[in-house]
Length: 258
Image 1: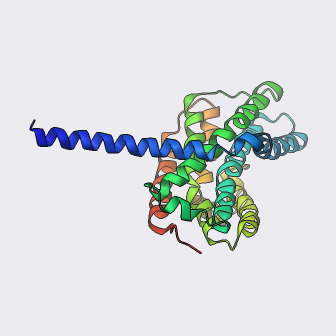
Image 2 (image 1 turned 60 degrees about the vertical axis):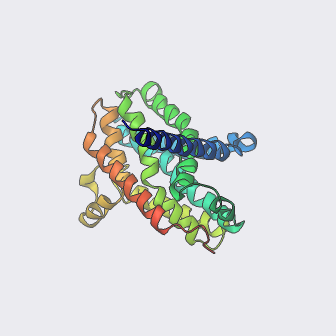
Image 3 (image 1 turned 90 degrees about the vertical axis):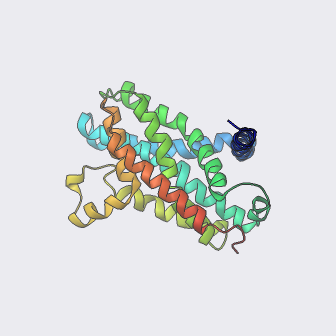
């Protein structure tokens, strides 16, 4: 290997290390505000899913087959609340205060900022996922299992919805409008998909529409994981949604948007 090639490889490695360092710094900065309001952030992603789970259990009882749908659906709802909803509101605030002007001068790509905020929301939501699982397994006596695929789905699924949150945050007039729109979109992407109910119970039109929502594949993968199997097809589809989201963000997200 020539000296020129050695220098080129060393430069490539140093650039990669710098990119990883920049991403790490962004993630740390995204977590900075949790020093003051982490309790409220945790309650937001915990109360709604547990309330839904308790409500469904009151009406369904100990029907193991359906309660697995309820358990997986609440995990998906918690994920949606913690990622898409949070990202849309965070970007709505950044737009209102012109926070993107600050990030525009940094040596980062657009999706790096999205990864930082989604990572924060996903990590905040992990305790709620675990609590929901424990409630289902030990309080509701459901025959469910915890394996690595369950954790993998929960981590990937949040990024698959990132383009939706970014679009809402950037296109909203201000933070207040972003908050309203995310509250409207959340139940649509949850209840139009077979998240809480089997696909066979959906009307034919909704059954076709559900295929374009990543929540469908997240719910299927989580249910299979709870039953002890690894659904690599649904996970692969979620990865495709993540890739599409990042490509859209990189092409259409403008730091200078007004």
